[in-house]
Length: 322
Image (cartoon, rainbow, N blue to C red; front, side, top):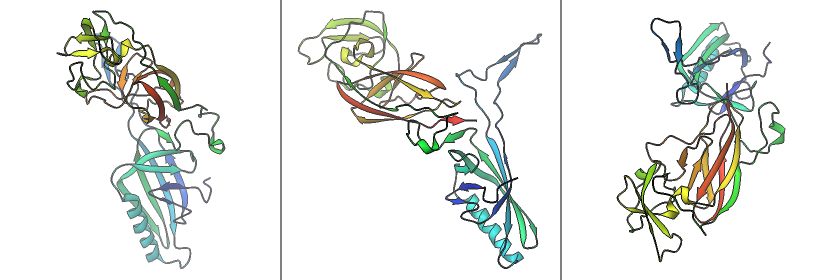
């Protein structure tokens, strides 16, 4: 049985506390998996490519509600039709998916939209309004992870962790990189040894060291490198593999979906992150063809490289659950 005051919030209003209407029923559907399979000819074997890029993807989910609409003051059928029209306009406003918070999941929200309109069944001065939302497949936590709000802490799904880190990167020494090794340009790399600008297009790629030569008179670098595919000399300070100073941290994504965090650099400048799989991600000068930096379900061990100086870095993300 649905509580008389139970309902949902959407587009700035709650069905009961703002509109005064009760909920007859709710049906929160779960999304289907997107399957990409191939049946091997002349066999019973099926190859599943659904998680080819490291995670299973899902279809959108459907959420359906039936609202009891009534004119409790004057018992007027015409007033009920006015209520229905106002409700439908409220629900259909805007373009794209918006926050939908159901009272049965108060610390989560759906991203949902009424796509196919509503339907209304009138019975005198009463009626039933049926609403079907199409929603993003995952429930999303309302608060950013790492918050310390004790009253909403859920021992089944929440993790107490620090998502803001303060550290310092030193540039007092660099280690040599041998010819033939593969290297990456740091997010802070802006100029070649010659003074020419480094284009962000060169970021996010792997280069093989072709030549090395000593450098004098530079305030931080004592070597420079010629990399295959780049017709200029690169300072050692701009090659990640030459760095001795970095910061290691662990962030837990307690959801079931990989999420892309917003990395906010409060203090400091550019950063390069290296994830569990050894993938490199430039946080500021991200090339247009690069994969986005994601936090996968479970522990994410991350190594951060940066410029000389102090950093304060915040990872803002919300967990996602089916």
